[in-house]
Image (cartoon, rainbow, N blue to C red):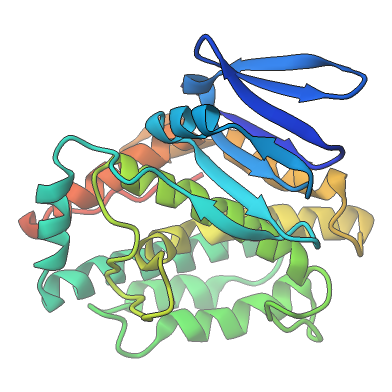
Length: 293
């Protein structure tokens, strides 16, 4: 099922619950209603949005990722349900007990898939990508040679020009990438919770200041989807501001179809399969099914 992505950014609003429906009320506009079970992500990007406790609890019960944005309209917080799966305790215990070799094996799969996806983006941009394809084949367990970083140094100048530097606080198009990655991260974290996994227990990322290490791990092969969208926006319009049109285009990524296990699935459904594949692979040695496009 294709989940809805709702963003509130242009005016003050009240969000309440009525008969299992999310109700959005704004002055001078008819109320908008939506079944909560149809919503995947709610983005609150206006400083005057009030959410009733009933609506919030019902959204969390239905595994809706609620993203709050700051004054610059950049995601600053994420709410997820405390419990999202009937076997959560068992799954988290398996996460915590995962061996170092298992983590390294999974990280190899993630890095290889990311580099291949970057090569696909460069091919679409009509840039040389042969080195990336070669490096993807060379990734070893745990990526000890740091092929991921080598690929990044090759990839970014070819996609956005020799002067581009990928920095969170850098000039455009960096803010576009930041926004797209933040929404992608929330969507992956939502899928992990739904699979009974804890987003903070990573397979590679391990910073004590990062509450979403596992989400950051699993989103890596999907980042090039954001890069591709931002490249198209930048190529066609050279926007400098993260305006409504840019955000809508980036949110459109979550409505695309992905291919996983040789089947085309809606984006949110593919993420659910991705998270479930990781849960199965934790201690079994099974292959990790990573979405492609």
